Amino acid sequence: MSVPLMQQMATAGRRVLVRVDFNVPLTPEGAISDDSRIRASLPTISYLLAQGASVTLMSHLGRPEGKEDLRYSLKPCAERLSTLLGQPVFFGSHKNIRPGEVLLLENLRFYPEEEAGDKTFAKQLSHLGDVYINDAFGTAHRAHASTATIAQFFPHKKAAGLLLQKEIKFLGEALINPERPFYAIIGGSKVSSKLGILKALVKKADALFIGGAMAYTFLKAQGVAVGASLVEEALEQEALALMSSGKIFLPIDHITIEGDEVMGPFPDGSKGADIGPRTIWEWTKRLKEAKTIFWNGPLGIFEDPRFEIGTHKIALAITNGNAVTIVGGGDSVSAIEHQGLGSKITHLSTGGGAALEFLEKGTLPGIDALK
Ligand code: ADP
Ligand code: MG
Image 1 (cartoon, protein in one colour):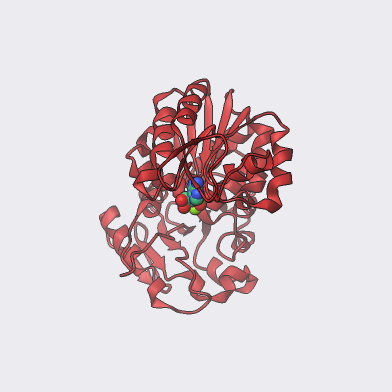
Image 2: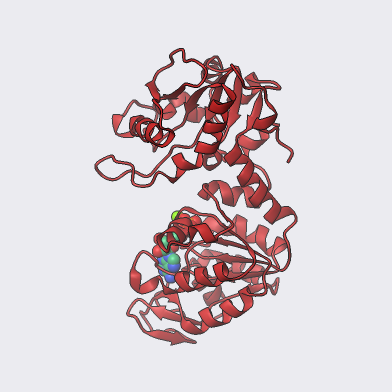
């Protein structure tokens, strides 16, 4: 791995400043609805504490737009972290802590300088630690003060945390040297939001299975009548260019929003909501050949139980085989977790946008800053 590793840094007795990603989803009442991101940071925090470091954590939460807005306070995260670690977690502004103690700073995005990547702000933050660790994979695609700018103030004293290392290992290996056949499954709502990753994968993967709403842009581009299904007409040419690779598989049947099965042209006004049973059968058979599978984007409107079958069945298919399986994307990961299949996936990426950008570009600003 081309980044410095946390395990190679001397951290005993040192003040270690760690950028974590505690950007957790909240309920309308402000409670944490899913603490996966806090849990994902535990290996790094526990490791540093066991080394005898004092650990100052920093993160953002939501979009407070550069103003102090207590709806986005990280206080609930400090409390949850304290429960998970089984020790007190100090919270708020800077204070002196001793080896073995943990402090979580308040939401960095209360300051506009954070998202601006401000150098003075980053320098002030840098005074809070002797060593800088970045473990915030989910924010590593942003060049912000605490994720990128700050690293320049820690020459030879900066490194990747354990979570960041794990993400680089799985997503990096999938891209650089996958065991083949390497198949990718791409779904979700829009071609436009995934064009970069589609172009990267069409080069790297041996086959691409395209479902979800974005399949209809590809089908329409080929002249198939898709009724009222979501289509991005401006991207039909891009879709045809991708198709010319000969690697793309599209659904051969569909479930419409009315619950009907459709093969071939859609009736007028009818909208595709999930892949159909023949597609599931066909893709399941082909996916068995794969040695590596990357998946991003649900294959139907999975939030509605009537249209989660395609996503559900394909998730079962990939977890039954022996392939290395990597799933990235907020909705994709939540669909898999909802099915209770999370533990059967080789690597569930904690970063949605970051995972896609990393696969596309092979690096991220937060990773580059550590080099
Ligand atoms: P991820 O968060 O995993 O990257 P996306 O955000 O790209 O995934 O896509 C998820 C969304 O795509 C879901 O809200 C889902 O309802 C939607 N979607 C999937 N298939 C369809 C479809 N056929 N029609 C409309 N929306 C769809
Ligand atoms: Mg999403």
